[in-house]
Image 1 (spheres, rainbow, N blue to C red):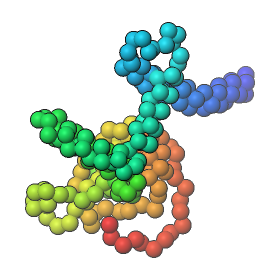
Image 2 (tube, one colour):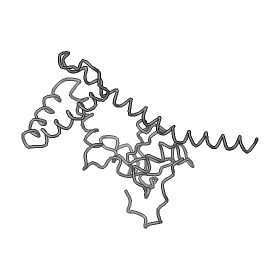
Image 3 (cartoon, one colour):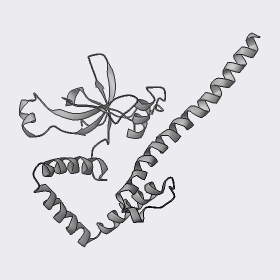
Amino acid sequence: MTIKKATFKSVFLTGLLVLVPLAITLWVLNLVIGTMDQTLLLLPTAWRPDVRIPGLGAILTLAFIFVVGLLTHNFIGQKLVVWWNALVRRIPIVGPLYSSIQQVSDTLLSSNGNAFRKALLIEYPRKGSWTIAFLTGIPGGDVVNHLPGEHVSVYVPTTPNPTSGFFLMVPKSEVIELDMTVDAALKYIVSMGVVAPVANSRRPIDPPL
């Protein structure tokens, strides 16, 4: 009886291990596609399809993004983008907000940006407690005048949702650069440490950040 009970438990857990990741993945995809489908509401009523087709809004959104990127990829499109940015930045309240968001998006999405290019190990939230962070740059503005020594800006994501976290400025000497890709570090964080990255062979210490 004990053996049968153990076998039943093992089979049940095996089924959970297969279905839970699939269910969560489908839930996330449904959330994303459902949100993108709401873009159909931006179309004139006459243009909206009579029958609701799941995913149609997501396809139109992706197509629209691609077309915008295609149009702004040439010289004329780039000039229009510059003109548009200059126009929006002159609008009170909206201008500063738009500029800030644009700088962040350019840093995160640009292939030439350096944000989230390095996984780091820092002591946080207290001495003796370590966590993974991502290098986002160096402090700027008047902040630099009040920091003793050289510091770096890092982003410490929360678990299991890495889209929220904390922005910290820590001494450069207290930051350890990891021999780990950003993707591997994110998986490690999202899995709450369960999915550990494959250990690489020891390599020479990199130059300081």
